[in-house]
Length: 339
Image 1 (cartoon, rainbow, N blue to C red):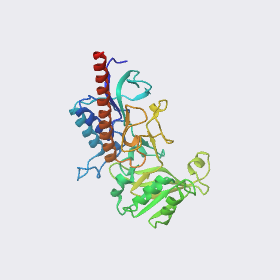
Image 2: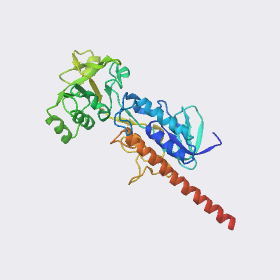
Image 3: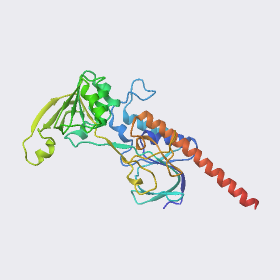
């Protein structure tokens, strides 16, 4: 274990982590940022960001997060390409175990590890993510004006994405592996009543057609009248294979918050694994000295701009807490000296 006790450690290097690092570094806390295995987070999967304040001509997702890191480093933040795999938050300073076996101690902890979108395992999805394949309709829907797009999923998230995409797309096709939605009744009804949304029942995405140069051009879909066609194909059953032309595909089967290293700690997580913060406009968790920012604590908005905002909030909350701790220690020392 390192003998150094850090004032602030930030776990995660998306825009929430960078924003927290900028504010913490400017407050002279010399934060250490552990980037995780995929530095930059979900934004690196987006080729063009058009809705981040201050970039009227848009900016590449990777460029945006790289600029954020450079800005944080210019104020003194230090980045290490490590992941936090376990945490002991039972006493202070907190102890964090890294994936290389090292342990570090910190007085304050900001969790900004984000949430990973679930993928479906379609052929060519690794190649096409960010090039017509997306996990965020709000981010990328405007690129598909007057085109036909697919939304993969059958829950509330899929209905929300499909309804939003009707603002831009000519027709939105919802691809669902069963003949009944998992979405709430009200969300399902809204989607079914929208004339720009069509449903492809008992259907699954098998492969994505296109290239990074030309983007998504189509998809290979599988269909079986009794649903779950992929499973049936693997079991040797005959399924219908459909070549479908489209310009965009949106995955909407949920996100998984990256909170595995917190599962055995006192931190409150909700049923889906998101970090719960205290009531009110705060990033404080139920453990004093631990703060959360970005998609790891936000299952609703999940936008770069909101992640950046909560990152700054977490650093400001941490600064206030650390200053209060220092003041208390100074008072205790003064009292002991007087005695």
